[in-house]
Image (tube, helix red, strand yellow):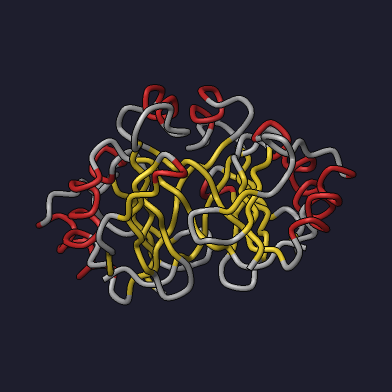
Length: 134
Length: 134
C-alpha cells in the first residue's frame, strides 16, 4: 500500500544553523525557509535525488513540534511520510489493521497542499508516520 | 555532496512484530531477517519505490543499538544514511567543516558490503548520520 518515502522530517532548534549545515557541510540543495502558519512550523526543504529532508522549526504558539524539541533540545528525527494513492482507502485499511489515526481521523491539507494523516507512533513501533495522498 | 537517501534505520524492540506491521498494516515489501553479527544487529529491509527502511534489532552482546532501545523502549528512528561517491573525500570535507567522524575515522564495511562512516549527531542537529560510498 505505501508508496514512495515522501520525506523525513527533522526538528531543529536553530533553522538557520541547520540550513547552513545541510548546504555547506553536506553540500545539499537547501530551500529558503517557508513559514507554514497553518501547521505551526517553518520548513526548509533539503532536496535529495530520490526524496527530501524537511527541517522543521516551531512557528507561533502551540506548535506541534514544540514538545518534541523540549524533550530533544539538540533536535532529532520527528517523522517519516509515505505516499499513498487514496488516503481514505489507506486510512480505512490502517484502522482495520489496528492503527490509531491521530486527530479526528479526517485528512487535513498538509504542508504540500495535499491531504495527510498521522498515525500513532505506539502502533508503528515508536515512529510517527504521516501518510500523504499524491 | 550527499546524494540519494540510501535508507532510514528504525530500531525496534520486536523484529517479528515490526515486520508484520510493515507487511500487513502498511502493505510494504519486507525481507526476511538478516543477521549481521559483525554489526551487532539483525536487519529487515522494507523496500519502497525510491529508498528503503531498515528495521534494526540488537544481535549479541554490546549491540550499537542496545542503549538506544533502553532509552526508547517502544523503538524509534535511529539514523539516516546518505550516499556519497567517494567516502574519503566526503570524510575530509566533513571534518574540515567541523563534523566529528565517529570511531577511528576510517571507513568500515557496512551492512551492505560498502564503506561507511558515522557522524556525531551533535554536529548534525541531533540526527545520527551515516554516509555510504556506493
